[in-house]
Length: 587
Image (cartoon, rainbow, N blue to C red):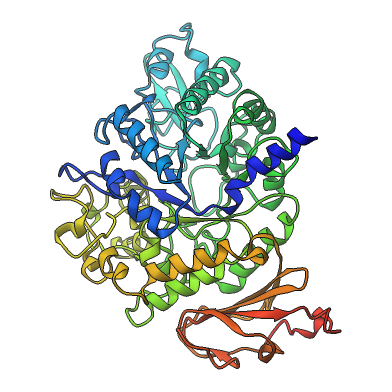
């Protein structure tokens, strides 16, 4: 019993940690080649410590030909030459630990690069010992193949980067599966040799001293072995294979095995990227008793309000839908699993542009409001580089300014081979494209925003003279200081870390309001997602004092100004003899 208690206490550190994601290519260049690197990260460790960061999540730094910016790995136990050396990585790990911060790596094991030695061997012949490390299938004979093979692909699945998920290999006369780029062949997790190779690699990093893994598309490891066709919808010529390649029949068997073989042997934080995962599935992956992972990332809240072309749209976010999604995750995981709280990462646009306002009049207010709204919920907070400065989407006007393979693939399919006008597609890319989050970190107002002395690999957002870290560190009412103070407030509040959640005003189109409760202690959080004044129809606001707000004053308690976010102490209505139903659900 004593050992079980010690283990529970030891594993709780990730619940109370601020996690900061670094996209190495865009964080800090130390040698003037225009590409961020490991030594650049080392130079900025003091900045992260000062902000209050507990855990650094490092996007892939492994050896890679960079077809998908490092998510196509050719050697799991080597560092990409552009980023530095293994010796420099070891110094980064030591210096982060010396400052009291932990470091979590990105684990990408649904697929490798087609330049990985395993795949180079696998494609040599059907009899090669590595053949079954990947998913190879015979063509459907007698059918026209749009990709140029002698028969149709094994099924109609579309790649998540558009086009077919199958690539014809002339040398051996078969197709291989790639759910992303054709240079990212999917590993065959049905093969126990593959799993053991991955577990050995993970243990190697563990012995080096890392503090865990963020697990890329971990819900996709197990595929339906019948490989059925997917439904054709939304005008896409390819089938939706999501029901068959995500949350597959053996996924929990694989992750429980991974836990036994590796995860349970280290004091790690583990968070899985959950493609196709809702709260119910999250309980299976990361429930307190499942012996799999600590947390799951979901994308329901950042993928709301889709259009006819899925995520490629310029639709405004629907606040009622956003409230429904985030509240469902808070309530359905309560007492059963732990939440991950994030607005941004390397795959999604900037939160201020998506949910707040780019207007200089409201940009900082909305950035602070979004921080209040999300980070006072229950779960581990994640901040993506530049989010703490209120960085916004890049105003690129030319397709050539972008670098993301997904953007070029979707442009080719929808514009060059489809009927979407160029101008319309460019608005979609500006609204939802991944490169919005990948422009260089804006450190100061010097050329290239202090990111590099060379030519950056992707253009710097031209607003860096107005939005940069140096200016904000020197100004106490900045987004940077608001983030820093907010996370200090979180760390000292048991009601935020432990309390339950209750949504208020669920149908209000402009206000996101909720309560947090821990015994007699309560907080009311109210956020205005519009540029208009909103009356606040919540009773008894005069009973508690305001303890946090983004306007720097007390507010008027009757309503919320443009993009205002306020937190009040709240008296327990049950203790006061009132019913929770006294709070109206609609203005």
